[in-house]
Image (cartoon, rainbow, N blue to C red):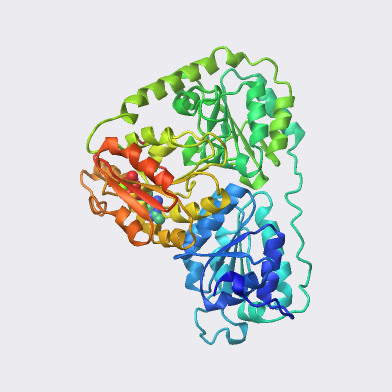
Amino acid sequence: MSQDSGPAPAAPRHGGDHAIAAARAHGVQTMFTLSGGHVFPLYDGAVRARPPLRILDVRHEQTAVFAAEATARLTRSPGLAVLTAGPGVTNGISAITTAHFNGSPVVVLGGRAPDSRWGSGSLQELDHPALLAPITKRAWTEHEAAGVAGAVGAAFDLAAARHRGPVFLDLSLEALFGTAAAAGPEATASAGTASEAPDPGAIGEIAGLLARSSRPVLVLGSDVWLDGAEGAARAAAEELRLPVVANGQGRGILPAGHELLVTRAREAAFGQADLVIVVGTPLDFRLGYGAFGGNNGSPPARVVHVADAPGQLATHCALAGAAAGDLSAFFAGLAGAGAGPAPWATTWLPDLQAASARAIAADAALLHSDANPIHPMRIYGELTGLLDDDAVVIGDGGDFVSYAGKYLEPGRPGGWLDPGPYGCLGTGLGYAIAARIARPAAQVVLLLGDGAAGFSLMDVDTLVRHRLPVVMVCGNNGIWGLEKHPMQALYGYDVAADLQPGCRYDEVVTALGGAGELVTDPAGIAPALRRALASGVPYLVNVLTDPKVAYPRSTTGV
Ligand SMILES: Cc1ncc(C[n+]2csc(CCOP(=O)(O)OP(=O)(O)O)c2C)c(N)n1
Ligand SMILES: [Mg+2]
């Protein structure tokens, strides 16, 4: 039965109807799910809603949650995944954990075995909240149909409040299938995130540190985008003439080629800075755990950490300054605090710009490499010229995606999706499904390692069934490259790191109803990418790359 031919709404309404009304009141436009009897009333509620709520059914629950997460990260409005009881919920756990690490506002609604039989061994009886509590803002159970609307509304409010993150609610069979004439506490639209301006005194102290600095660096992370502070961040950077390094979804806030963007000189910037202001991202392994400076005889840098909520501020390293709250207010406050003339703009900034230019120039040879087997960088050399400014680029893989992070510079914020600090392989198809829906007119390009492809490629079937064209580029080196090379370096041999050389992932996509082709010659990459972008169908360009090439990694993440 198609969604549009569903029966007309009938009263009294069951818990599923109330849940869907509450989700819709919070801006949800798509439910990502995989079927199971415990959640049928949520489907029935979606079908009977007027207009119906779109149901996007996938082939693995992790894809459903990754799609909800990417919806949240692209639209900055909470995503919804519906998982059936037991294995449906547990299959979603890696993706929920990814949302937890990324601070992505996601609501996961789970089915749940009946209360009336609890303890007697009914199918898939599992107390999910106990498993979900450590990786969500809150995980709990609703037992009454009359409580469903209020509980679902509360879940959305909580997911969207700073610091954002996933919220889990399971609904017992009685709550979902049971009826309640009234929705209980009204399912009202979210008030959004209340203004929570950071302490002006803290901003003043940070402005003071900046005024005394001669080599500052500003780091923009994902929460700058998720908090809607990208405009204020850019304005502050430009006003203060601060060199900027971007990571995660902070990439694109200063577009490729912006004079203040020195991400490519991050080694010099972080190594020689005297002040590093990190906004909207944890001081984790990606940022050397917050230890900066100390190169070329310079003393360690002072570190300032700014987050959207106090609980996000680093406690593992000494901070010279800190502020928490609305990040737009932080940037406006910093820009307006009158740090005075920017002495760094005459020496430090040009030095970093020169270092950036040198790094970019040094890449040219490999980005145009004619080597055969193909050097993975050649793929990025070709792709850069074919991407629109508003393209959504998704990375799921090891070394192949590390190259992408380094050599593809987004033209706009909100167009780059990597898995984030949890580093979970398998995000690819879920993120791509969501991107196609969230940005219907944009190019959506999914970069897949051949190993990563195995986690979610079956969901090409979802792209096909739901007519969602996406370009997939598989950097196929026949190995788990990011593990094989380090194991070789550590032990002099490797094991459990080989995949099938030359595997025809393009034919997998073709078999599932999409299209694709194999590329073995560097000159064939650009024409294949053009065909893929013009195809209007799910299309995988399977590029065989050189397994001997290892990404020059500077951190193990440990
Ligand atoms: C779910 C999950 N399992 C295992 C890993 C460990 N891991 C990180 S990168 C990587 C290799 C990825 O191989 P591939 O996607 O082929 O990319 P390549 O490094 O070869 O370019 C592995 C196994 C992980 N990050 N996530
Ligand atoms: Mg590989």
